[in-house]
Image 1 (cartoon, rainbow, N blue to C red):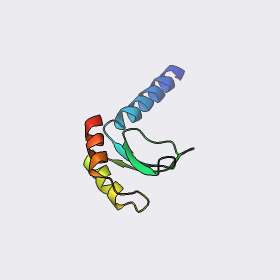
Image 2: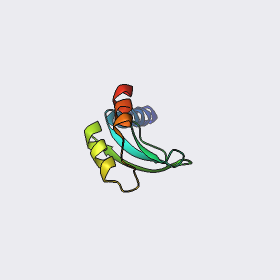
Image 3: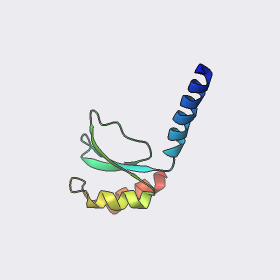
Image 4: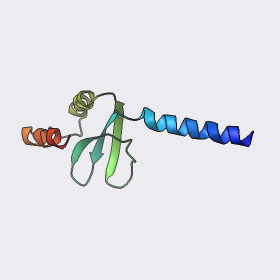
Length: 86
């Protein structure tokens, strides 16, 4: 019975990790004063002061970032850098 419980727990844990693949979050970084789009669930500690999401696509996350008041507008140069990093 214990083996079955351990196997079920491992299966559930691996399923939730794979479920997060392909999702995006908007995070606010206090040190840089900017908001970034990340692909892992952010831990709100230190310089990361908020996280919003998850979003199913990068485009959805970009739209959300543009509606968050504390996020400064992204310049065309920063947008090119984001596209180049992906």
